[in-house]
Length: 451
Image (cartoon, rainbow, N blue to C red; front, side, top):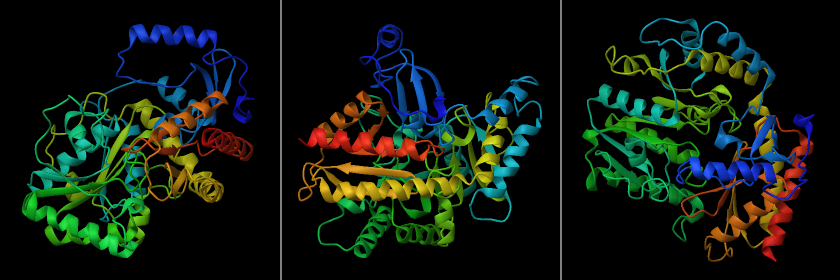
């Protein structure tokens, strides 16, 4: 059964059937839609997929954080089938339908934003969720400016591309960009200024944020500060909780809204249902929260949740969209949340993280190329460097590790501004045997490239 299989490569890569489809892709799809994988998927179950040529791969990218529940979860498939037999689509701006309302009610009950009464809007993608969060923040505060961070990724629309930090490949030659966006330095603790303790570094980065109001935009014009609880494209950088507490105090001081962008970190990835639960436990809950990716097991859907007075600041017709909160996607999301709560996917995430980090730290002691290990639950990264003393990014070496893993049936991906971080987003229903096999493949790849 594919769901319990292990990696098994039986042809050269790409195999002949996959190679033929990849050649067709080159003629049909723009080059800007990149893909390095040497295979074409035929079917997937759990953490595994089989390609057209019969090769079996383990997926540690998960559609870039979309497959926390893995491929082809049977109960979700049945929920989608049942909904599709009733109706595929109607617009919430035209006709009421229960699926949208039920999902909004559920999210209102579990999303850890400030306020006793909450409301949720459903849209289609992570970028749309961020755009709408900004719209609500501007409307509610009657302010224009937004503060984002170095290393941030918020999407590929004009506004969210502006908010995104990484120039290549996301912004180069794509301007002009949206006005009112200002960028502050993110607390990248592995690369903090030499000589600073972590506590001193937290104060250093908070002072950088305060200086934004003197050098870039007055606090009175800032509607919101938006932060990823774990930076995605930035390299899976985790800000210290003391920094988040400091940002919350700054927001409260100046009447600025705090937005948590949980597009990638939500749905049990970090060992909590939402990473913002860590913030809330520390007295620093956000005012608005976005989510997407794993919300509907792969169907397009996203959300923004906030307290009532913020969410009701927009008038009828000012937010929404034709496909926003599609009924089939909502049915999938309701089932996803039910299963994740019932089967303790947050616990699965913590267990995966503990096992992997123990192994990663062994590599950190053993391999000069493994510079830093970061993890919050099963949202994990290894930063690859030429050597530990200089911390010079080892981008090419990591690319070789990724390629070597693929040759042996493990799909991985790099991330980070310097391209030298390997991110881990394996499905949370991965088996112990599969996890061990994947770790063995990765360790062998690192050893080979080190030589």
